[in-house]
Image (cartoon, rainbow, N blue to C red; front, side, top):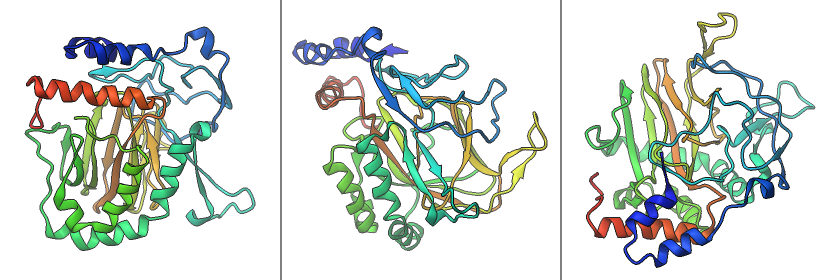
Length: 326
């Protein structure tokens, strides 16, 4: 993993932008121990497909940038790493009403770690519009081909996986706005708040259609600069598959693992996670799973850093060090 500060110094010819970027010093360990942030208690769950997986310990108050108290699972971005960002596999959790054990999805709420205001707004924004987004997907997606290109994107999947992209490698796609205008307007509100991870080659937003009997193998993101949101629109009926470790528990037949935690999707309920952790996705049912995927800036990357990071990649593109096709 190459520290982002090193990459920035290498890519920037004038050094002025690098000086601005590096001047935004991260707090020292001594300083971060003074930071107390409340977060939800990790879910006791579900099983994992990772042989080293273990449940995260209870955690109600966090000191410093990381929730993890185990070395078995840590974020491992494959290319760029910005030190000092708060870190945990899932940043969202479904909280059921204590007054009704048989509560429905409508009676549950999605809580965001650290009660982060920008991420909480994003989760609420997408969840309140999920039916509108689903309706547009059903009308528009069948009429246009998938834009997922195995030769230029990663080839980690087995089976059938379709994309209909609002944003590819940080660049918005005109056809999406024409076919899905209401969804594009919903995403535009996210852009206007400066939350969308755009103008960076690792930024994506698309309808992700994972057909039955398909999977996306374990991998980690190229960077920890982003968090990824899943808004489930169509979720297959779930069953428990036998677990190699504990046949009595099993894992959902359609779900995902991030670090040591496995979760299914729930229609209309957002999942927010850090994909710089090792993670994998599977759909071992005979029906299709559909969600809207949206990349957001990690909330700890401040406004000036975001501008400098975008400038870094703009400079690299001008110098021919990377292109939209790579």
